[in-house]
Amino acid sequence: MAITRRNLVTGLAAAGGLSVAVASSPARTSSASRFKAVVFDGFPIIDPRPVAALAEQLFPGQGAQLSESWRTRQFEYCWLRTLSNRYADFGQVTREALVFAAKSLRLDLSSSARDRLVHTYLELSAWPDVLPALQSLKNAGTRLAFLSNLTAQMLDAAVRNAALNGFLEAHLTTDRVRAFKPDPRAYQMALAAFDCTREEILFVASAGWDVAGAKWFGYPTFWVNRAELPSEELGIRADAQGRGMADLVPFALGRAT
Image (cartoon, rainbow, N blue to C red; front, top):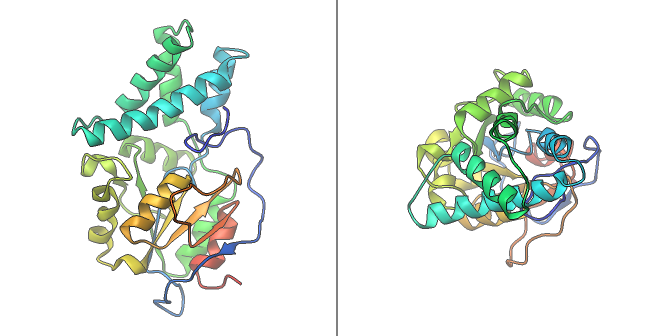
């Protein structure tokens, strides 16, 4: 899958250590952890590369182009549906975006291939650096949860596949508010779930646009920037970023240098 600012990261090696670039530091809320809660977009934790791998297997030499078109259309459909008050869950959006992408590329997408590609979202697991990072945060008393456009079924499957049971609280899926990020209604869910102020919740993004949405809402943000992409040109930056989950831990616990 080709990497763009809207696309899921694909074809990367397991995340390696990278020094964390810190722009600003929210106030400490406890001696153990800088934040009372950390909420994650789906893909700092979930490894999406199998989706691209299957696309290439089904359409040799064209899988990357299909994946890029598919992911771009997924985001566009999410945002268009939210703006138009025509919400459909991410499973439906994913299926419809795939059908459009295949048609736009004049690919013969059989119903079997379509279903296999969509079902891959229920087969995803975690990036290799996730478990130790979550364990460190959990040991510090930090509450953790997804705040994601993905459905609860998709998130449940990833937790099960990666053996992450017990680390994350109830999923803050956008299905609850029927509005995809970056709509403020989506980010608002964490305030109600954790009964915290904005400054006490760290939002962890996998994409620059999500950094911007969360920062505009008022959350401190950390960008797990596995592809080392530039920040969006929106006049806003993450409070800190790194290439993997190991870089998140010192920042979240107030130990970043």
